[in-house]
Length: 569
Ligand SMILES: [Zn+2]
Ligand SMILES: [Zn+2]
Image 1 (spheres, protein in one colour):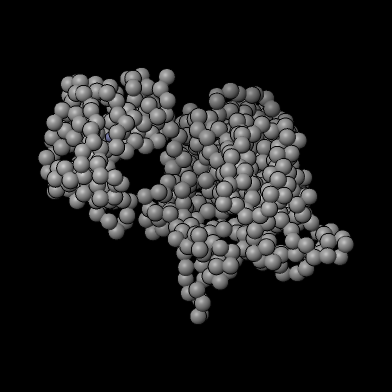
Image 2 (cartoon, protein in one colour; image 1 turned 180 degrees about the horizontal axis):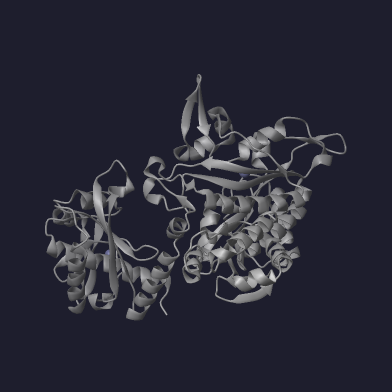
């Protein structure tokens, strides 16, 4: 079993092998850098003429030959002067040499190929046999959009052929259930060049999104939250006061209104704070839980965008709880209950929890940190939740709890945070009148469960591989008839089901039953009601489930009973 570090060493060595093959096949190419990544490796090149897709198998074949040659990979230190001479025609390597500390630099050597490198390689090219080149894409020197445009070749490598095969199988599976692909197949949402990174939701996608929202609203009412909505654009003065301007301005969008600069909100906190500050509060009102489904905009570089997972605008299921330090524990207990219940409703049973504690450069007294951290710990313990401690990973103003969920495809997603914050109340001079008649400062607990509706939508879609559970499916029931003679019966059933707010479609085609079933299956509709001569005669219904199982001879009342149970989550 190899460690992550072993894999890193292998993959970084594979990047050298790639550069070696490229240098031989395309001698004028300038080399830049070639690191290992999470899933593999890449090398950024400046070729004389751009690489094309069909160059990949040629490069790959040469890499295999070099691997076969079992070339020893050695490392040596040379003087910077020597290195500058070696790279006199390569401005990228010269820049790297200039930026390195010390008088010497490392050189990795295999056969007659060498590359500037600080080391950490496998012993011989023979170990690099199990690699795969995947793609050619554009990149920039030092990831700077104004810098030199380069070409990136990306690949992956493993120690054994089996590991590589497993990785490729897994990748293929993920691709099959990619939410962008499912979104198209099921007509849920789309992306357009006219608004890069801004999702367009189609009618069926909106049904899912609204079902997620309605479900959450029900939970919010039960937990005594109050819902607010605050503006999307607010004066930059506010963002300066909140500190977002200073720390986050590169990710914010600005525009002018009259004589002032406004910013499109990247977070909902300042808006919520203005609502709190609008009038004085008594201790009797606390904890005051203000929830907002807040649409935020954040600038992301176009290369980082990824379907619904990484967008430039998304809706947070945000809430700010204004409370006293003594109320933190109880509030967090409620949040934990709510979070676990909600994740389970979406079929996520593998939930991990992390508690991030005081970082080095923090503000606030020891007493405050102890109290806040203990409140979170006590809440987790009371709720019987196992958690890991992320030492020193809290914000500079307070500890936090993170929830992550494991999906059906073996991945983990960080969703849900609870963050204790005495900083913004102080910053915005928030108060409440305590029982003894003195003015005191509340604490804010920032919390989100889905995190982002859009991203959670994507995660849920992939988790279910497109086959959404009954309560969430945009079309819950499709009515199929064996011949046109049953159409009237179908319409009367449909009408009665719709009256119970069920989402119904009738197949109006004259296709044979098999064809109707096929088209409903392609849309992953959970239930098909199959109506034939017998059903009409007996006034019954046959349910055919998506997995092919069937139930015959049901009355409408029985069908409605079943739907009520499934919708009642
Ligand atoms: Zn190296
Ligand atoms: Zn907040």
